Image (cartoon, rainbow, N blue to C red):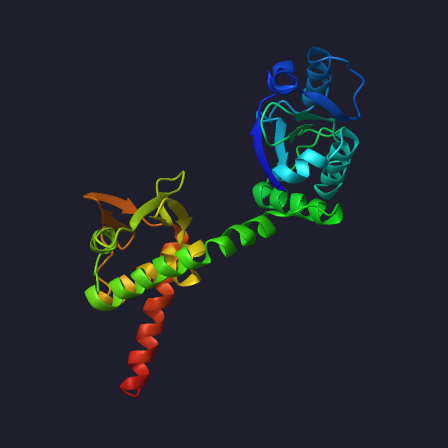
Length: 286
């Protein structure tokens, strides 16, 4: 089971989720009296008017069991999932309504929660994505459902041989060709039929790579822990004597364009540089 969240304004959020074309079924109501989208939306607004400074005043969660788990769960059990999730997220003092959507092969929950509680306080959204994932996983375990990690482990186990092939190609490229730049590394891997695809985050920064081989697309860390973005950057930095960085040591060239590195990349390279300085100092007796 996986959980995702978006912070939105009230507007049409409830009406969208209560769309009968999506085979929507109400499985939980919390602190609400309304019988239709308009009435419930107005109840949300009454509380939200206590804190007009919060613009993204509604939390929209999607909780998705695996296809197999979703097929065997009853509406009552879907409601139980929503209730347990609310408790884990410490949102019992908020208005909430949950629906199941059955219009896709993966039956899932849309859980709409007022971000403003009855005291007029805004729910803290710090690390809300991670907390959502953690809470969904905890609920899944408590109900004997498969967690995201279990599904991921099954997927990677089935691809064990293919992952090993990609890893071996990576090792040979690094050992035999000793690429010094990301572009060089990408070209060398492509010559071995492995497409290396840069992963750019919402801030426009490079955060890692995906690898496509024989019709399968995997994150570097899914292939092997030695193929995370930071690890690859460190190998290239070693081959180039630290010259892969440009533009005030925060960007690299990929496909003719300058791309800034994410914080994780820069931290990894910084640790590598410090380690090299310490090693060199020990060698000369400092």
